[in-house]
Image (cartoon, rainbow, N blue to C red; front, side):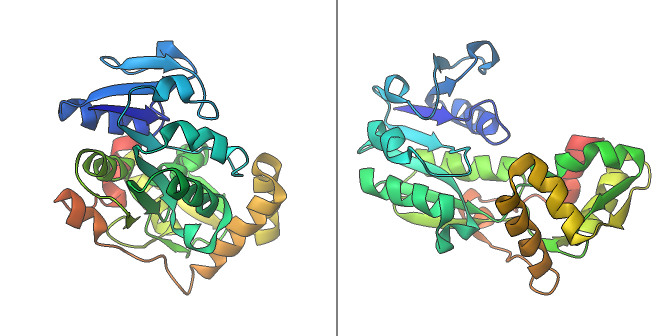
Length: 260
């Protein structure tokens, strides 16, 4: 069996590669820069928008679609027709959007699919790192409660799905609890060994700041979503312990690993 990992140098993909290698699975990676490919794998230079050469002879695929639209997804997944596909999706796929569109394209080319729908990745908190090291994080909706998941838990789920039969399964992949964003910042301070405080940012300022980097539409959607989590926290799922056999890793553990 040969498994192709896309996004193999990213936050989840590198752990997927490590997990597959530990399980003795022959692994291939699709990378833009072969010099950054993990050791001990078959590295193919290319891009997820044109994975045909990398897809030759593989049996399973860990799929990461890193774009804000699904433009070109049908052509991108065509080379994976009939193969096992484990797709890193999002909880919001249920409502459509780019994640829902990618899921639909995957369903069209194979019956052996597994969708890992995350509420959010803890690694997104790395965007706070410069502010955290200066002692104050200024952002919107500090009381928004998020069940963000450690990237290693995502990878453990992916390895299970790639090496076992999890066909047509949709998993909600979360951390073990919903933690307010301001509390996440406090835990980052604990990991740094110095207090870090939260400074509430007006929503319109947050939209302007995020919009400059990610586009206004995405920024407005994100800030509106955070507002909703103040009264209605993100759900906590038991899929990680049920599938992997170990508890989901808490945010405090993630913070220690990335900020200590």
